[in-house]
Image (cartoon, rainbow, N blue to C red; front, side, top):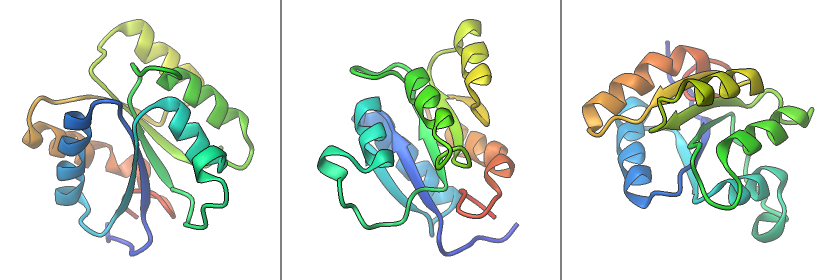
Length: 146
């Protein structure tokens, strides 16, 4: 696989330390990717649908999203529901990146259309491995790696 120059990733994580770890891992997996970070599901939906603070945002829509599940305001499952219900966003590649290993969270995420389900690793090496493992699912135009 070769890296493209137009990858845009939306990282949705309410934990600043977790977001920083993910950003560091992404920089090792794909240093050319452009990553936008939002702190909860509501903000993710505003970003994707260009509402509120993101109304009129002119930058390119992301090709992929790394989505935490357990967040305040709007949880990851609701973000999945709304994104998969919108025809304009159905092509967005979504990887759930969460600390939840609950079978019901995995199953609901699958039913709602996630492309992969990744458990957050406490260390950067494990996270890098997981992002590399799932990169083949994001190997489409606008995705993480193509």
